[in-house]
Length: 128
Length: 128
DNA sequence: TATTAGTTCTACACAACGTAGAAATCTCTC
DNA sequence: GAGAGATTTCTACGTTGTGTAGAACTAATA
Image 1 (cartoon, each protein chain N blue to C red):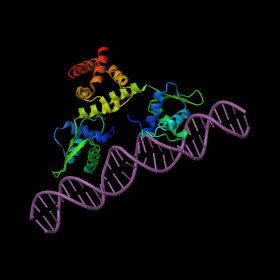
Image 2: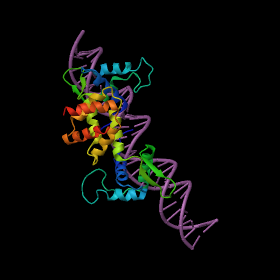
Image 3: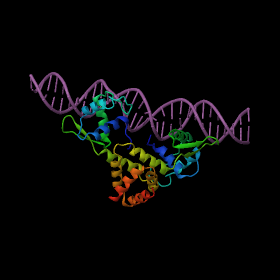
Image 4: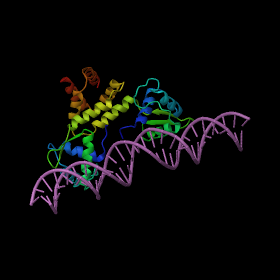
């Protein structure tokens, strides 16, 4: 239940970036623009997708519980259920999972964290 | 490059559990036994797989860089490249990834950690 | 060198994902 | 209220990853 496809991720990134709920059309446009200017070969190149494609993806994301839609208004409006940070943190917990060696995993995890980030973590732990 | 299939995971679990390198036949036997006694519906039920099936899976795991094989000996012997803890920690880093909001993610992550685990983390951080 | 254990090749079914046309539905305007 | 256009749902196809294993090939041994 973890990983997303490339297009699914691109859509989620847009939903996470914008604060407002977006329509399929808006998203299609944004997808077309994204990384179109700079020739950067990053992720989903700015293809011109059909709206139905975007809608299909949105439905799948809804089924997965990542996206929520307002069915009331006519152009349905979509938004992410939780913030990217929340979602990612959840994923991390999922990966950490119910391993029989959670502590060992955490040890390795902490071990390969930058010094500044370790500092951040220390501060965060003080608050709990 | 992250998630494993059910059978792939079952094989990795066996490789991670045993300290010695194992042959495909051994693994097939272990897979047959695993969760066969208790009627537990956990993961891959103890089916009797063909050895070729196990070999295919092992090849794929090798291609993914998770498994290493000694080609010298005739029944090739397989072993995990890194420990389960290492692998899981790596996965966590992968999930955390190069998000533009690493700190926010870490904050959420820490926020939803049990008290005892938070304590563990504090200790781990002191050593770095 | 024939037999046999072990490995590689090839293949098929099934699910997830990218992609989109066709068909159904809604809304607005005349 | 009927037609036109926008929007959504249904259906579908190609690709890739995974579970599964037979067929063909290779190596070791009697």
